[in-house]
Image (tube, rainbow, N blue to C red; front, side, top):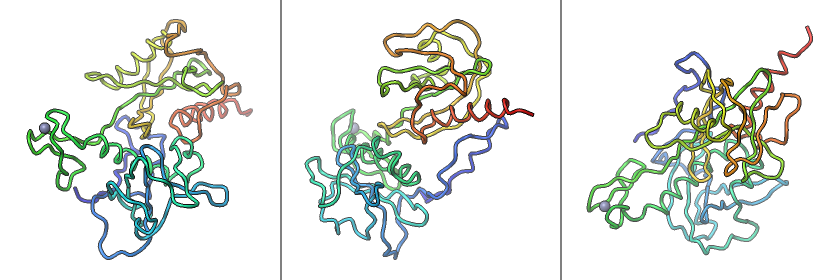
Length: 300
Ligand SMILES: [Zn+2]
């Protein structure tokens, strides 16, 4: 596949603009440009932990010409594309690899608010490519070792021909409004006190719209209407694609699914609980709701 421009996906067919900003500086590609000897970004992973170092109290990613300059043995290396004209690579390291002096392996979740946002989104690509490499060495159908499939990000089984692409798990996320309040819930997995909008994985055979309606019904027992697309975001924990919506309360009372949800309720924009981190689509949905409601309350 040739290097390609980011599509201009900000315009949606229903006339509503995506509320999510694109990572405009990144151009995905399979082959690095020839004849360049400039330093590249190296997104190197030991399992799901990224090689990084701290400088001036922020997290940095190695930026050198050749990764071998760092003296680490590489299991696999994948060119990802250009970020602001600079080459980006995903690197898979052995599970027992020690970090070079002055560097550490950090969890991606731990660095995602400390890393430059453009770099974080390339790291999100890198970790998923490395994970795919690690988990598709052998054909899932016949167990034979897979081979790279030419110019595609795919691995092919030489025996049965099965293609293995990087795995993506679509998940919906939705902010439901009732008058000037938003529905938020606390999952058992959240840090203490934190509430967010509802989210869940799409089931095979289900449309995104059906998934939203089902998730809201299952998790809090209410029905919704006026479902609208909001925007989407990759979420590399480990390979989700979050597709965001807004919706309006349609009926019913909150009845939580206690296996999934600890607490749920309607929150006004000026009375919100602790929220998820700034760059998550969950937070962007909530910020959109707050901006809208605060603007409508402004005195004339
Ligand atoms: Zn096979």
